[in-house]
Image (tube, rainbow, N blue to C red; front, side, top):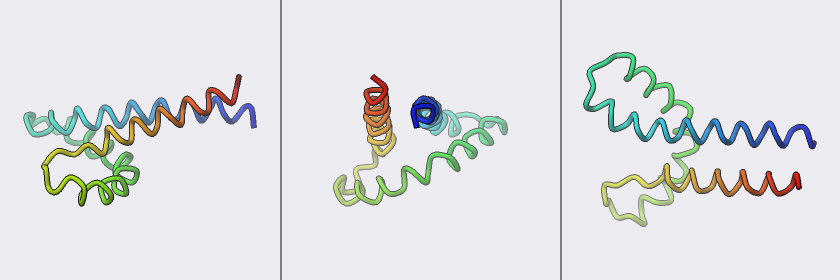
Length: 91
């Protein structure tokens, strides 16, 4: 179990980077006609959307159609809390 925790910490760190990249790419993809950017955005969406969809379902009624998607921020906060909890179990 002790060998699994460092792996989980690294996976959470990598997934956090993917979530952040997805947020940045969501802005860039609309400004860029580059097909490579669109493909990377599609890939990050496929990886991130399964985690974001439940958060969006809960937040949608609360935001009242505000037009700002804060679900990636909520997910990143959750991932960092989970990561810190795992780090604390090691020490």
